[in-house]
Length: 283
Image 1 (tube, rainbow, N blue to C red):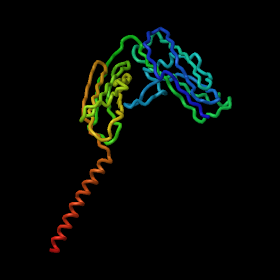
Image 2 (image 1 turned 90 degrees about the vertical axis):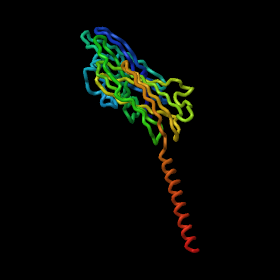
Image 3 (image 1 turned 120 degrees about the vertical axis):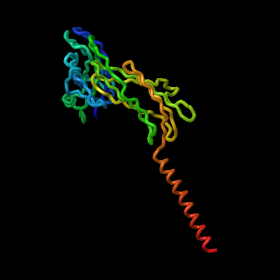
Image 4 (image 1 turned 45 degrees about the vertical axis):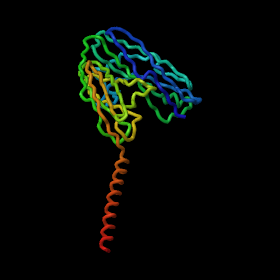
């Protein structure tokens, strides 16, 4: 049976002072309901992002990922019984000459195939999960970023509908962007999002230093056909941007239905004209 696992939390935030030492932990959970233990291996990788869509890069080192060398894992290998968990502790030793600004790393947990095989367990796929460390070193920190785009489409043939934003960060530390969405039926005024069950219409995203990030979010539970009013507000680096638009929702099948009706009407008119001409010619 193939083992699966999860790690908690998926990300952590630290504020660091040069020359100080910090501790933290992650929890590895083996939820596989089987008779086999899960052998794991833990390592630390630099964490960077590539492109506006933020593809994770855990291979290349940058000025913002030196923290990977500051982190040591207390118990880097081990084994977890089915439906149990293991806390893994780590220590961050911040150099006295650490530069101010953001530092990012990924604590990677992977299955250990050598141990699994030695215990007689067959592993078909060796995979890894990472807990991201977002840290900022105290000192001369620069906050420079802006909202480049706040986009809401005006027409869509499919649901869910995606709203988007483009944010840049020219500073030396990550910034947190807050998004607020409100969606109503433009014809009836009925609230669609947030629902009464979930009143939280906010979500947040991190923008890494010296990057530009394109962020999208899907709006669910929309009618397939109709008009909805969408308002998106972005709070980012002391800047606020609000855009409100009506989105016309019209699925592809509706175009075919309208086309069918139009052609049917045209066909009926043509047939009626021909019938009238034939009837007139017989008189």
